[in-house]
Length: 186
Image 1 (tube, one colour):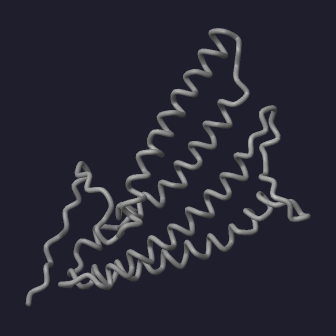
Image 2: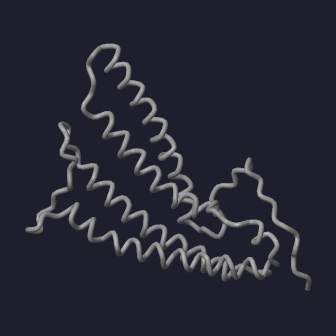
Image 3: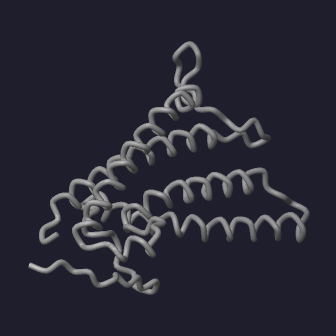
C-alpha cells in the first residue's frame, strides 16, 4: 500500500463548513458562526446610527459604544472556536504539505491534543477572573458592570463568555484529536 505524498492544496474560496473530524460540535459551532457574523454587521449599523444621532441631531446615545465593544469582543473570542471547528487555524503548510499522510495524521493528533490541553489550562486560569466578575465577596450573584453612565454588565458577561469558549475549544480540540486518531487509511 502506497502512502499519498501529493501536496495538499488549499482553496481559499472553498467554503466547506466544519471539518468532518470536528464532529457534531463543529457543525454546531459552524452554524453559530453566522450569528456572530451578523453581530459584526450589527456593530457597523449601531456605529452608523451613533454618528447620525451624535453629529446630525446632537443626540448621542449612552449605549452604542459599549454594545459595539461587547459584540465585537464576543465575536473575536468566538472566532478562535470557529477556526478550530473549520480546521482553519494557522499552520505552516510549507512543512505540513510535504509530510506523508501518516505523518500529517500524527501531527494533527499531536497538535489537537496540545491545543486541547492549552485551552483547558487557559480556561482554568480564567476561572479566577470569572469568579470575581460574577460573585461578590459574600457569595451573592452580581455581574461586574462597566461603571459608565449606562453601566451594563458586559464586562462580566464577556469574561463568562471567554471562559465558556475556552472550555468548548478544549472539547473541540479533544474531539479533533480523537477523530484524527480514528481516521482510517492513514
